[in-house]
Image 1: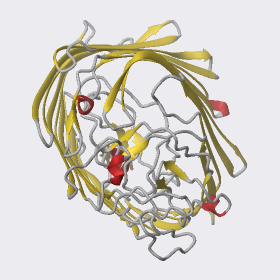
Image 2: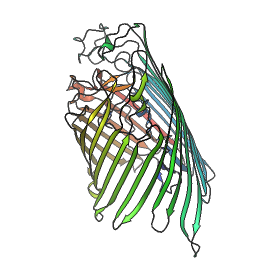
Image 3: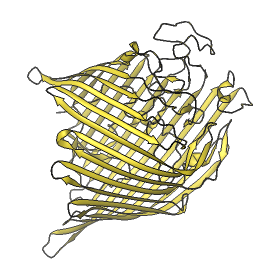
Image 4: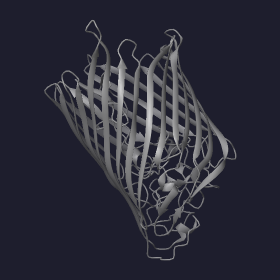
Length: 594
């Protein structure tokens, strides 16, 4: 059986002794081939395009270029991102096909050499012409990873090489309407003859991206014994090294510059718009960890030394940062467990920044109600891209103040009822965002934001109901566009048939968010920017699917956006970017193992 240890983020501690989890071989969400908001992401309408967020944007501590984060969601898949241990070779082949020439091919293989060494390899490619003109996308992902732990657990390493690359045509409008058979090519400015009254802006714009990462994590363990010969503690030295290169570039052969003028930009050279963005980085983390075997307390202390070189169309900059951190986990205070983390930058980028996190976890009612309280305090500079950037039509060099961030979370869970409640309250000062003219701006006043998230899972016989409801808000003066309500509902029937030889599942998924001024997308900087005056949302997105599994084979048929037959307008999550029309897809996944 294939087992999974943990997510490989390279901020983790590979030396941790964790319980194994089985790889997903059951009927789950294989029938999805395109994100439609079910994961709180805003879509541009075609798989492989950039994704935004429906929630309050997260703020990260320390150096970040922000490039690629809107394309990363295309590659967030389980295979190739975990640490595995197998007692038999395991292989998986998946193929999905859908309307508008959508195809997704995925292959994954993992095997142990002896009991201590495991390696795995994964390859994925996908692409689609899209439902509207100039929407075509292509994406590729390659992973190779190798992990080892000695028999006595005195030494271990994890190595991963990962490549994400692709292209995305950046249209931003509708030129022909696939649902109502408007097969004639409309003129670029004919907004009255397409059903969503959407302008076609760009004919030739294209975004390219290529991310390559090589990561190595190692640990050395030094045991300690008491007078009885029993271990009373373990000392670890852990090193994480992560090198990467990121290349992003944009090109647009202009027919006219009307599209850029809506962002307040005047294109002087009417022949081409060009952007090049290249980053080389090396992140180094070294820390010492001590496990107290008698009470489970774990303490860590160490530092980060990170080096980067960032190249834009008109500038080359070298950046470094050094910080120290410490943490303590699993401290018991009566019936509760306390954990804490502190990090302080001491030189280089973000030298005045800090990060403090704390958590209190425990059973409020024994075997019934579990509670978790978290607090996070942060002082950090905004992403490097919001400070320094340039392409052929826009650029900036900003001297922004540090952002201050306070966040409080309170969560409850009742497992026997399948009920979970999450809440958060945040305060932000000196918030930095992309303004109406695309360039970053700093909002110097303080504002609050909050969110309540309620989810409930229950079943009646073989019928299952997964319900989710989010309410969120931000202080009215804040420069943040955010939908107040997000609703999710999954209803499905699942049962083993034919003497448990076949597992059948069919159901319908519903997702909808309230009407709001969503951020617009600026492909020439690959960012989502503030806009006013265009409301989107309040459209019920519905998927119906049938899925089945026989031993190691699983297949599905999916019918997407069936609500379009009833609600024929406003199915956009981003202004000027319609979601996909009604369509059908099918897929098959085959697992090979003994």
